[in-house]
Each structure stands twice: as structure tokens, then as C-alpha cells.
Length: 175
Ligand SMILES: C[S@@+](CC[C@H](N)C(=O)[O-])C[C@H]1O[C@@H](n2cnc3c(N)ncnc32)[C@H](O)[C@@H]1O
Image (cartoon, rainbow, N blue to C red):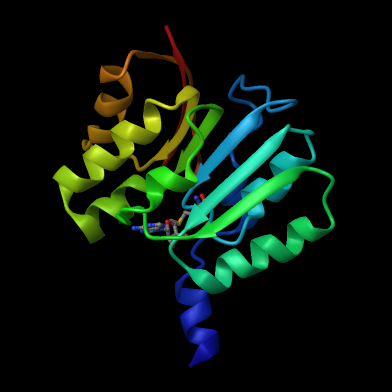
């Protein structure tokens, strides 16, 4: 049962999760990074190899955040991992005012499903406003709500990577 639950909460391979992240024109070296819905820190771990200044991961799943913290015990990169629902009123108190790069990887749709569109939009608008660069992984669907939120906040699309597995990685920079 435990095995089944763990598998259910880890869909996709490492390759799926990393596809396009290092070819989207974003340099992570020396940057402050926020990984929204970081799961167990696999993406953060790979980004750490590029020597960012700081990585902050947030996810609702406590055991997964525990894994991420354990991985980063052995890393020279400063990090913080919070087990928190993005809908929590405490969210603004754990976030920095600004991040160089905010990762929104396959997370918006899940939060919207859990919290509803209005609340999800408010939360993501606040997070996006703290970013200079946004890297988003979005499903290949006609639903472009997240892209509209990012563009509405004053960002321009700088790179689009079509993943063979159906989703796209999109990098945006503030203009
Ligand atoms: C499809 S996974 C993507 C994980 C990771 N971003 C990646 O690309 O490998 C979605 C993640 O969002 C997290 N999540 C969903 N709803 C959340 C919420 N309300 N607050 C915080 N995290 C949430 C899930 O626990 C899960 O780890």
C-alpha cells in the first residue's frame, strides 16, 4: 500500500522532469531559485550542480520535502525546503521578496484542481511577481491560463521547448 501511494505521487521519470530545463536559455549559476511544487527535490538537485546561490523548494507532501532536505544535507548550495500547501496563509512569510528564477513545473494545474482557479491565480500571480525569470512546464492543451498569468505580469516568452512526452517547457523573462 505504501509502495502504491509512493508511486502514485511520483509520476514520470527523471528524464521527463528534467527535459528542456537546461536547454531553455536560462543560466542557473549564481541565481536564487524558487521551485514551486518541488516534489522530492530531483529538479533542485540537478540545478544545484549548476551552482546557484540559493534554492527554495515548496511542496505540500511532507515526506517528499523530507527527502529533498536529506539530499541537500550533502550539498554546498544554500537551500530551504518547506512542506506547505501553497494555499496556506503562511506562504508569504516563507517566500523571499524576489527570486532570480521561479520554476513552475507541472504544478499550476494541480494547485488549481485542489484550490480552485481564483485562489490558484492569486497565489501564482503573487509568486510570479517575485520573479525575474519564470520557467514553466505546461501540458499540451488549449488551456493557456498559466501562460496568460505570466504574460499579464509583464513577462515575454524567450524560449519554448516541445517535449517528446507531450508537454512544453517555456522560459519567460521580465521585460
Ligand atoms: C506533477 S508534480 C510536479 C513536480 C515537480 N515540479 C517536477 O516537475 O518534477 C506536482 C507537484 O505539485 C505539488 N502540489 C500540488 N498541489 C500543491 C499545493 N496545493 N501546495 C503545494 N504543492 C502542491 C504536488 O505534491 C507535486 O509534488
